[in-house]
Length: 224
Image (tube, rainbow, N blue to C red; front, side):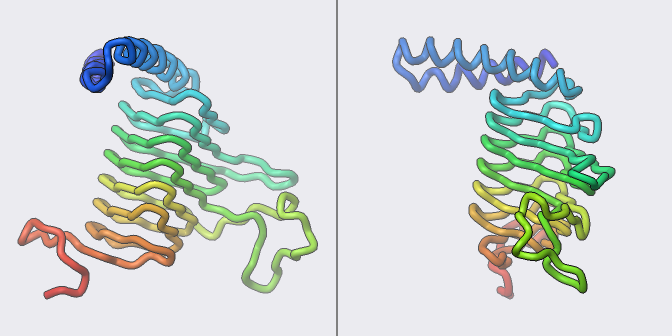
């Protein structure tokens, strides 16, 4: 924990060097306060050695597990929903070690969401394993019913591998399996599986590049 805190403090000092003198002092003091507050916030929900930014809320914490040295910035909303109106669920959210997320992360589960180690998420990322209502099959939700009163329905879990980088405002709705080492461009919407070591973007997503292990480089998808 001491080593990780030292790394954060060193980053704060390095960042402060870009500022004018007074701005630098204000920046350093503010970041130290945020660092301490974030550590305490993470500890209250059982996340040792991690950081949870200001304005964040974690609901259903006994169903949420996170590895060491995670850093989640401001205004996150992470919720494992065990009951909704007359429904009951057995949710699980598991996040690996050294997870980093920018501001406004939103993760919501009634089933299962798993995220591997060393992942980096941009701002405004949304991940869910469920919908409000049923819109396929024999028995579907009526548009005459208020959306908030419709049942929560999950058709499967969300699994995200290790070393995955999600750009800003990426949306993921399960069931989805994202392989290790995947890069997802900003503003992409993911509703289907993505193979490992690929670079994707768009809505719907398209594979742009894949990593050639022999050549040790990213190459355009479909190139020989």
